[in-house]
Image (cartoon, rainbow, N blue to C red):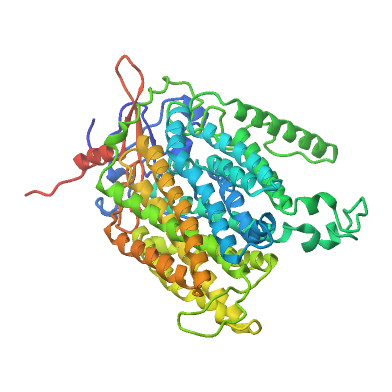
Length: 638
């Protein structure tokens, strides 16, 4: 391999995670893994020499054994931001499909049930309707994961978006309890691919130092979708009543001048919010087809005609824009239709457009039963306990806020009943406003907290807050209708729950990702996690709705909060102490013990031109490179 300070092969190339500067002796380190796929003149001429000895890349007054200080990770430093953004838009499917109806769920079921139905019966029907979505997810999650490991990630996501659009439209125009339940099942099938999206995130961003932010994007968009779904669901439901200036008797869109308002909206009062959902998901589908790149090894190198169409349309738009600019005396710089980033390719995310050997054949995934070990099973169980109570809260709390107050209610320690009697627009607004606080926490607070105390400790602290929230929540019905104290108490419950959810969900996804033994098992493990989480989301609302209705019948509204939600949340908090944090499926480099924040390069790859007859590229991963460096470090005389 040569002496210390020598080069790796002749004409070898190196990629380093965060360092792209020239070293003191003039050798060059390319800037990142995103350089793979860039076609430059320098790539075509094999004249680059890379010194791997620490002595050649550090100044003389720095100890060779001192690890380089890693650059601070910011949102702007995330790799492959366009791909993450498209994937984030695709993530809108579940919150829009699943949470939009929560603002008007009580009123929807009442409109489909006989007038003699009681609040307890409506609560049970609401729990069943919410659970059907998760039941379908549970039954299809593992199938989506295996299909994604075989056919590719992108086809699974595109098919799921198509099913989500269909189910939203069908649900909005359903006029019987059986019809809306059937469309909820279709929506659950279409959203059984959430684990595939998490797998794509792990494959797009492989360095652990970026994970706290990369894995926040999907929960961030989920929170945004929850906010939009709850807000627009509350505002757009029954538009003749809630938006009389637009759809009422004197509304500007009441073109037929119907004295009771727009006729079809009176017949389908809950269709407008689902039509809004379908429109947003249609935009996500268009982005996925024309912009999302395959990440499955072996499939990523294949030609993607959706990307070809997307690039062609973008090039035509650029040319039209340039012509308009030239006519006005302006010229757009770089508007020749070429991509700004070298990884933009119709042949996958990591495709290299420079000539070279054909890609290696993708190794088949390991046998299904050989994947599971103690750490994976413990993490999966914790992953399932979180939605078991969180999904129940998401269904019970809006119904609790909408349930009329008990006329004979009186302050008592346990024996009190009723809800708060709020209208759907108020419920949607409050849930949306405090959902927005989750975005602030995700963007500014969680990454710093995760970097300081680690993923596992962030997870444990968040889980410890849930039981206190559930114990206090039913006492909201004892506050008087008027006055600031009731609104302050509602704010406290919502903020603490949103904060706990914001910290717990991304932490659970990171823990599940890092416990995977290899990249080829990510799809299966996330599929299993999504399957169990879907089962929890099926059991949680159904069981919670039944217990909530039973408590209402017995005159104790707090039963579901104290005997179901608080107990399960407490069990989840205790179980989190059984978990361990893995090193990641793609390798972690040297860690500082705080949630995988890397002190050195998280992933370092050197491609060395072999001198044998194959002429291919030999890949040396970070662990082997460290061994090579160790051989070159000066050793003290014993």
